[in-house]
Each structure stands twice: as structure tokens, then as C-alpha cells.
Image (cartoon, helix red, strand yellow):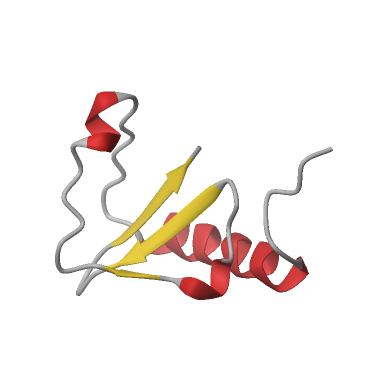
Length: 69
């Protein structure tokens, strides 16, 4: 089995961010494939607490982005 996060704390942080995003988001957009590669994350900072091996999170001034592999 392949771990999805570096540890339990990262997994909990990822779940908390997903819950927060679903609760407060006014809009949700799902993109796949080449659109992910073309995403511009300038102005966003990574969320290192997630420690994701299969997902990464980025936060901006008024947005939160999750990228799942």
C-alpha cells in the first residue's frame, strides 16, 4: 500500500482543508489533465502542513486550491 501523506498530521490537515473548502466555497471548479499543468499558481503559497504525497494545497488571498494526483 502506498501512503497518501507523510504522516497522520498531514492527513488530518488535508481533511480539515477539504471540509473548510466545502463548507465555505461559493464556487468549486474541477479541472483535469493539461488544464492542471497550465494552472498559474503565482501569488499562491503552498500549505506545507498537508505533507501530501498524493495531494498538494495552495492558498491565496481569497481562495484555496487542492491538486490531487
